[in-house]
Image (cartoon, rainbow, N blue to C red; front, side):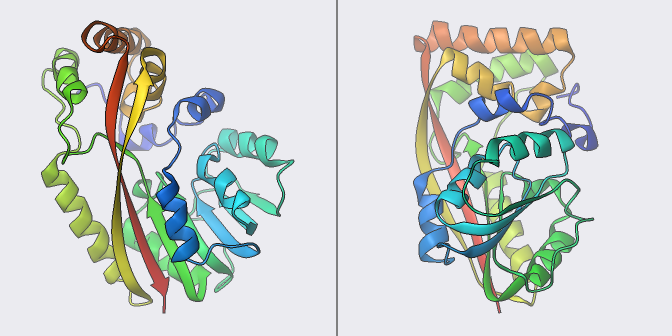
Length: 269
């Protein structure tokens, strides 16, 4: 999209309205937490660090499953304040580092588990992975995952219906998360993990599920995506209005969105 803001701008937009972000974003499927508990050893008194927790969508579940203590590395001070307010009555010791992961000091070998939920793609991957490995104790685990709102292996009438809207906005259709991109992501992410000599047992699990959303929730969700948030206000209002019209007129006010959640895990040797 020609109007898409530079990456350095898009990565800073999520703290503009934390309440709206927290309400709109989808939770992660239960299978993610099954992997964390059965493979990665998450249990009561597991020492955890989380990169880019945002509004704490994953954090709250990590605490529920026993993460204690947990260190949250959140570069956006607005989101850090939101987290501090939301988590102040949660059980477990919570430490919030309001600074970029590249600058935060983590104790070497100080954690049993490190995680990143829909955040790690904003970092320089291999540099960040080396820092992750140093922070984990021997035998500790690393896990990262994100939701793709559109599964390239399951065709979606809704995604097809969006193409004319993106074309009208930008002059070209937005192909979304294609099979080619999914294959490249898998190859690149696994290659990066395997390039870190401290890691072993590198793997990827694909979780496929479907989110059924009404018009208002679709608009709210799309309204949190960085390429939409950074549109000029008049264009953003137009885009979300047209998005709602598509859901109402073509899908009777409710759509099924196939979601792909890939989970990457690795163990510190």
